[in-house]
Image (cartoon, rainbow over all chains, first blue to last red; front, side, top):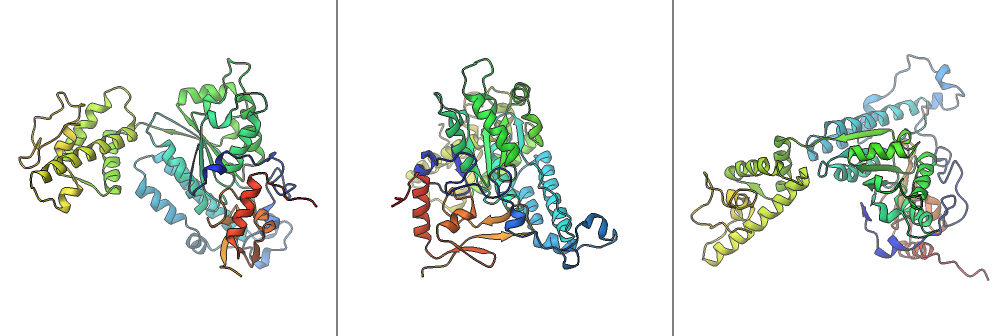
Amino acid sequence: MTEVGREVPPAMVTKGLGWSGRETPLGPPPAGPGMREDVSKRFGRGKVDERFADMSDPLREIPDDTEVDVEGVIGESRVEEVLAALDRDLVALREVKGRIREIASLLVVDRLRRSLSLEADPPTLHMCFTGNPGTGKTTVAKRMGEILYKLGYVRKGHLVAVSRDDLVGQYVGHTAPKTREVIKRAMGGVLFIDEAYHIYRIDNERDYGQETVEILLEVMENQREDLVVIMAGYKDRMDRFFHDVPGLSSRIAHHIDFPDYSLDELMDIARLMAEQQRYVFSDDAEKAFAEYLKHRMKQPRFANGRSVRNALDRARMRQAVRLYEAAKRGRKLTKRDLVTIEAEDILASRVFEGGFYKGEGARSEALEPVRT
Amino acid sequence: MGERVVLGRRQPDVWSGFQWTGAEPPGMFDPAQAEALGAVWEGDELVSYDLAELRHAFEHLRDDWVPDSD
């Protein structure tokens, strides 16, 4: 189980809280349904225009042509900042970005509505991410907590990533406290359940996963304003999981498919990853990496962005060995040497037949390639 | 009185109504927990003047520690 967004001492991950799901460690639950307190009562009703604050039926009493301060609200919110960061940091994923734009738009409109005392319940934001390995499901889930925090939807914005072993117990009475502990840790943020279909084994009557599913269903319904649940996995298996667990699919408002990346998108990812690690590809290295990807995409266990990251890590190692050997031979190294991935760092991969590429830019005289 | 640390803020114009700043103890979710452990509201800000003590007390709670009733 991992948590992103803030440091958690290991002891806190495993120690029980005695939380029943209906009460806080300090006593009875706050007012409101489930554990959630009624924030509208506790924290006020928002920046309502004084003229409309006391209206009992603003939907009918406020004139239809009353204008609202759109520019002011957009400026105050961090919507534009969030969307720009999303476009900058994530390659492709148009559908995902589209959904986040929808949520952001809803936030802005909700604020405008509140200024006229036109309140509505927050939308359900439980999500299902389906796609092959390495298509960005976990990366987007990690970003989602941060995004929802910036948009004001959640209180903390951290992400707790779990799998079946973190939720389901091994003996009678073990599962419920285990599941509730995980949920409690995720409150105010995002609970990311990877390969969620492993939770419930319908063919095994004694499987404790059903208890976890029941608790999740209850929390997803009654505490949806405190917790965003994201379930992820292969599409066909998730579809079967939803078929086997009635009521689950309908509690998930956003079903988002993560398609495999194209070659151009994978190259964009490679450039972005290299830049984030403060490396650059030489021109020849770019061509070599594209060639590498063409080969790798046809091979088994190709995992999209994850395969790009792995290839880049191996290229960094080959570059390091190449530079080290060159330095031992007396060659002076420069910053350019340290940051540049050369073609030979990629072409030495076993993905290419024979390990060594024979074409243009395959190796330089000064820096011998080293196969790893 | 120790250093003033803002644990969270009321955000009445957003859905969550309140947001933590990240200074709160890990795992703390409900502002009422912080209040019960000594944090105070100053306007829209929930602040602590003894964060170390607040963290210590919260970790005891997480360990199911119960104070003596006598």
